[in-house]
Image (tube, rainbow, N blue to C red; front, side, top):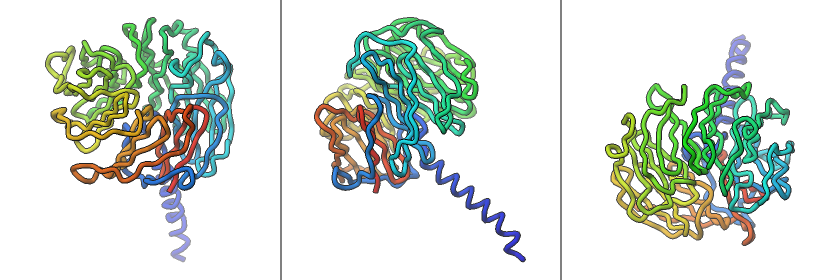
Length: 413
């Protein structure tokens, strides 16, 4: 008799456990939901072409975005054609690598010139319970459900004007509860956009000064208030997510154009390719805090393509030549440095015990970070050719998803 009453409870617990396990595998946007931190995951440490690569698949186009993971699916974007006239969003099975579906959309705007230094499928999409949201440098912002059916489509260049500049746009979508944020900083009229996920309609739009940047904003819960942190060429700032109102800002920065910001809640870390422009900013100010809240500046350390990561009181930056530098979060003092095999386009990941750096040549370096002086425990490779570049990575449960320009890989234990 008792089993009649316990079965529904057990069933509910099983369903809840299954849902929680699925949530743990999610990596729904650029750098995941916690700036590259994946502390609840058992991530692989050793792999190469002969061992540890669970599957690989060809992509429909060429792209520089990062893959994302939602439950049992991997989503990835790319573009195709001589003028990037084709836009692709593809869904792969996380388990097998089988292509579940691909959506091909005609770009609303095309370009005259295509090169690897002009964005090609660079913005990373966002996934959520109701679907996946993709943005392309053509200005097309498109939502699909998880079966690949189109939900809505906006053409931002037609609405707000052409994107101007020599390198295209590369800022990725950022998700929050029921909302999507998108930063468009370029040579023309720039703006920060907040949209409703369900309808795609604009909730608010904040106009900005023209400034060329590829950085992605960071949505951060500061106490009871949700804030948007932006590092963009010449400025760092915090805005209120509710209405886009600017709370504080730091001016006169230089070359903070690619690396996205990081925060531990107390400091905002800005990565720059200028030796004295990577800075830490105390986040409790109001208005212009350029002279009062910059806690430290680097003297040599720079940040190239990959975004900084903060892990247990240490800031990690990788420069254009592949030099990894570890700095004290509190003081900016260099703690140690290590030469990586190459520079990194993909942003690093930490599982709480190990640090992973993914070099553009397909090699990866794993550090044991449980000790005061981290040490290298593995150097891995997915075996891409010399003319390929490793652009992005996502962390699953016991796995990584990596992408080069035209291929996708799953690395698993």
